[in-house]
Structures are given as C-alpha cells and as structure tokens.
Amino acid sequence: MKRISLCLVVVLAVLLARTAAQEQKPPPRKGREPRSRAGAPRVGRTQQPQKSVVFKRTPQAELNLHFYFPKDWESDDRRPAIVFWFGGGFVGGSPAQFYPKAEYFAGRGLVCAAAEYRVRNAHGTGLDKCVEDARSAMRWLKQHAAEYGIDQEKVIASGGSAGGTLSLLTALGGPDAEDDPKDVSPRPCAMVLFNPAQGEAVTSRVDPKLCDRPRVLEQIAGLDRPQEGLPPAIFYFGTNYRLLVPSREFCRKSIALGNRCELWTAEGQRHGFFNRSPWHEATLRKADEFLASLGYLQGPPTIKTSPEVTLKRKLPEGGPQQ
Image (cartoon, rainbow, N blue to C red):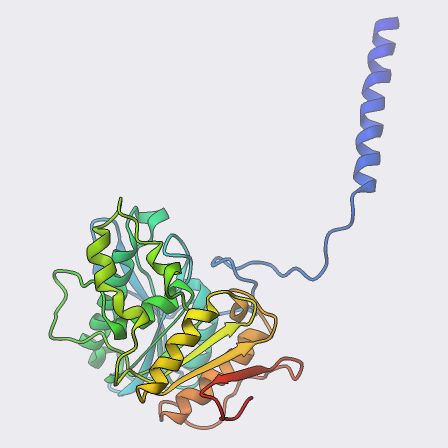
C-alpha cells in the first residue's frame, strides 16, 4: 500500500507541474495570418482555376497551366494574357501562390495562367530545367493562343522571387528543351516582376550535381546583362531585401539602353512582401496601371488599396514617386 500511495503522489506531482508550466506559457502571438499552400499569408478567399491543361510531359512529371478566364471570355477572342511563375528558390513552391493575382487580372480582362515547372525537391532536377519549363510554357501558350482566345503577340510574363527570375529569362535567353519549337519565341511583351533573384543568388543555385554548370551559367549570363529592345518591365522590392541591389543596377543599365524599366520599393519590407495584404493590393494596383499604360488593360484599377501603405518609385529617377 505504501508503494501504491507513493506512486500516486509522484504521478500527481508530475501532473501539477505540467499544468503549472502550461499556465506560464506566453499567449500565442496575435496577428499571424494563416498560410497558403505556397507558404504566403492568405490575402482572401480565391476561386480555384477554371481549367488546368498539360503543356509539357517530362520524365519526372506532367506540367500544367492553371487558367483563369474573364467572365465575358470567348474562345475566339484575341485578348492579352499573363503567365505567372511561383517562387521557392528553384527547389519548391506551388502555382497556388499566384492564384489571387491571376483571379484579379482575369477580372480585368486578361486570360491568366499559373504555370508549373520542375523543382529540385519534387523532381530531383536543377535550375536549368526550371528555365526550360518556363520557356516551354510561353511557347506552348503562343502556339495554342487561338484555342484560348489569346493574342499571341500580347503574352505578359510575371512571377515572384525564383518565378521572377524565370520571367526575365523568357526574355533574356536561357536553356531550351530539345523538342521545343525554336521558331516560336518565348519572349513576352511585358514583364511584371516581384523581387526577382539576380546575380549570385541565382548562379549559386546552379548545382553541378544536377546539370552542366559551366554550360548553364553561360546560357543564363544574360540575366545580369540587359539588352536593347527588352520588353517593358516593372520591378517590386522591399527596401530590407538584399537582392534589391543587383536588380536596381540591372534597371539602371536597362534604362540607359532605352528600355522602359520601372523600380518600385516598399519601405522596410523584406522578401515576399507582395504575397500579403496590404502589399498584395498595392503591388497589384501599380501593375494594373503599368499594363494599362501599355494598352493591355482598359479603365482604372478595380482593386482597393490601403492609404497606410505606399510604394515609392526609385527608377526612372525624376518620375512620379507614388
């Protein structure tokens, strides 16, 4: 009996200690938003894509374009389109990251597609295959433009972080899949770029275990060398993100070559700021105005923005600052 009583006392003491420890834990931090499948805080409920189509079959996986269409869309339209590539350091990520932006621009009259591409964690492939798949997606969409009510001369490239890099490389050149139709250009008519990676942040990701590193580095060398005649581009960065530096230099060089290149910053923000409110709305509105100035959208933006946040124009210098 003494042993049983002693055991009961020990168990009771342990339970009391655990309860006390739980009561002393600090309350959960407030203000954290639930995360989306892409790892970004949600910006509101988004409809699922209206159609998903395989655009490429690879040894590792079938790759899809996930479509959003305007309400008044008809297959015989000839509308501008925009393709989005997700971020994830070329190792992970999900096209769902850009579903909210695709849904908005479909509401503004664009045919929108969120593209898949191979990544290291899921497919065991390198950066070269990321670029190949992005360029394949642009070619496929242009080839099938008539089926999807798209003007093949008006396909916009967009993406965030690694996806922004892929957008740039559809214009600047990169590895191509052997069976891609080389007579179809992957070059976009404009680019909307959310803190794209450039410079060492990209070259350091070219893994010699997954590809011919010297060859791939040569193929993507244009990423840091703007060319004359580049499509108009708009860049977004948080001022507290180190990759602002190489992109700012790229924009300066591009402007000097006569290209239209805008750089807008969010004070104090870091990587991926554009995924969450209120910066999601602020960057979308500025992108809407940019595309409208090129004739790809009509009328004023329909998205509401917070008066408490402001994007500041850093380049070109001397232009309107907000």
